Length: 433
Image 1 (cartoon, rainbow, N blue to C red):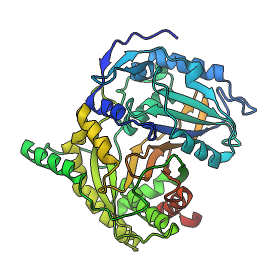
Image 2: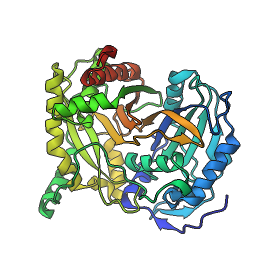
Image 3: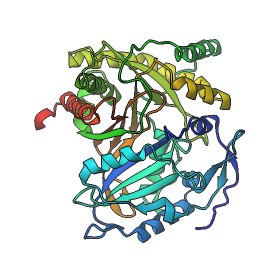
Image 4: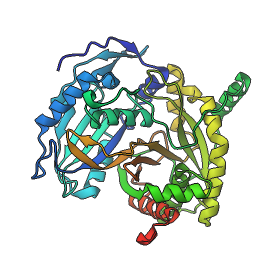
């Protein structure tokens, strides 16, 4: 495949910060894991034809400027970073790996991959074909470095890679996909208020508001990943009737999952656990990363499910607009600030859990003609935070992933409890409407 000659571009401050905070023991990548059906490059016998898959991806990369980051690598060290053209080597980017056993085997593979760096001499992505992930067809794991895109922009890349071919797709802006939440943007707060809020946010990283807990500490290389799925339609309707959003329901369910995980390792459950929740920002331009930060105390000590959901909804209504108005976290806006932030992140006691929810496509996608039947996002855990939950709405379902330090809490228990609470909120627990 010939180089596309897109020229050299500087990384935005937000994109560059994701390179600066990368580390050998905490690889700054996100994953999309999926299960494929038969068709396209997956034969009737379930065997994948990698040459056909590579041919399809070659055409997409060459014909869609929205995918140009996948034909660029990061260049420069110690100073300004830049995107420079780099011919993808699809023999290295697209590979078949050893078979796994079912969905659990796919999750185990994802856990192992969260500590494996991507090659720096190539564009920072890869697509792995995983036999054995399902009786219907193989699994896939798409890995992309966070400098290329955040969760919202990552969904845009996935839709371009796995949606309609470029010649059949209507013109659309690449990048941002809105996260769950109300439409419309707030008026920007006065500059003096943004400055004061920014100072408070920076100082807050130094506050020790979280007491000693297994949720915080050095993150080991032994990772745990578990998947959960719930039907989106009933959940959306039920929580909307309660004056909440799907994102509120996810946060409320995460509170239940965190409490179960703490009890599972014999730790006392506190009244609340602070979670860092990204909020998509408008006007990202050419940046792959544009998120604000919202701090939400998860009411882990509240036993009443309806009251718990109401507490979360009230908090997010008050804080979402502020997070959008304030923009990206102040310390990630410069090279040295990003390095200070990475140092502080390994020592902070202000946030104990990461929770991310991204709105995905309502319609099924396909990978080189093979239907993508199921899809789960997997986000990194960084600093000293040992537990994160990522959710993606896809084709009528909310697909959730728990990623944790396996020495801290059991991913399977957190995921199963979270799924049970989402089903309760949706009114589908036990298969009953």
